[in-house]
Length: 178
Image 1 (cartoon, rainbow, N blue to C red):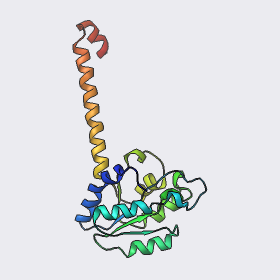
Image 2 (spheres, helix red, strand yellow; image 1 turned 180 degrees about the vertical axis):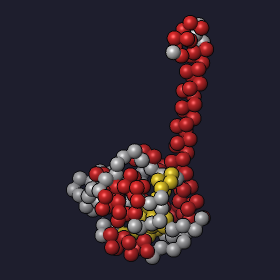
Image 3 (cartoon, helix red, strand yellow; image 1 turned 90 degrees about the vertical axis):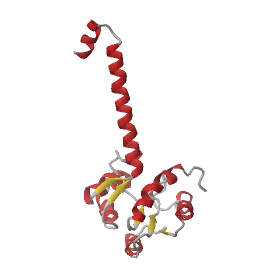
Image 4 (cartoon, rainbow, N blue to C red; image 1 turned 180 degrees about the horizontal axis):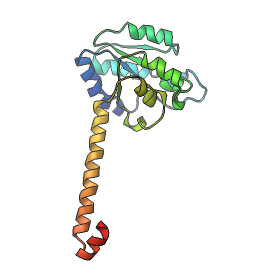
């Protein structure tokens, strides 16, 4: 059951833009921290798939298989405007360790990589850094929005520093600027 749909709603503009431009979209996400390794039913993304399907008014292809041949077959069957979600990416051994083989398998599912996961973008995981090394990579609309907010914060910090300098005496300002 989904208790907070914020991340799903925030990702919708990127998904909808890609679909309107005629792309097929393959989504990857993680949920929780699997402890056993492999599939754990309580951490499946199936509820997300069902919810997203209702939000975008179209079916979202999904398989709980962790076998890349099955996943690739499903991906190869997508047409323009189709959406697919891969099962919880944390079910794959090596994902958080930047496994190169996993990144290669994932990168072969599509032509380019759109990252909308700002909070995970700095990690050296197969689904962030790994794929970005193997395919043309861009930030999605959500990540761009978050980067714009950071740029705005930097501007505010600079302005505050300038105000602090101008509000001190000339001698103190000279020390601060040196």
